[in-house]
Length: 221
View (tube, rainbow, N blue to C red):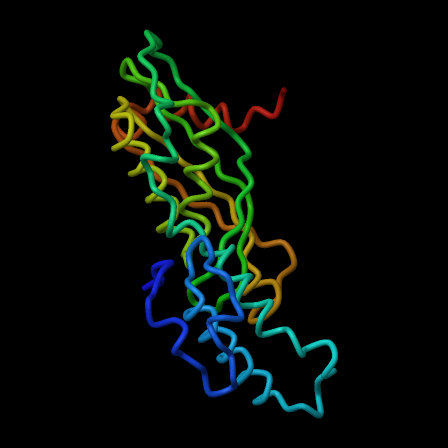
């Protein structure tokens, strides 16, 4: 569970390796006490690797850096959906597909704590309401900036958009490269995982679904 930003006991906590909450600012997602715990854990990893294998000057502040890094990588947990939307839901008489392609995302695999990244493609068939264009990439980021698996992230994006604007249909396709297969294990250099989630008319109507997929295949500007 991601910690809340405020904790009245933060100033009293000192980790076993001497990291204090006062060494950190309250972050977007992690409070100073949680950052101190993360720094302490990273310090233990470095100690386990062995000081004889490390450059002390290079790794001296590594625990502090990693604690701050995780606050940014996990920022999706703290996003308020209402603030994200910020009123950008509009009544529009438009009944054709809306597709936003090639939305870059970066996420963190919950199995190995290694990154996976790629592109999300999002489409929906409006039912008298459309959402502001900039909100769709922000919805993707909200779910990407968490500990994730790609399959769940794909479904969460689709379900959230479906509940947000109540369209006639939603489609989400995500293409991801996972560093856990590039750097370790099978060590393949360019494997891409493709996941999809379709709802409503994009699931039930083959013609609508095919139109959405054709938009994704079309590379013209």
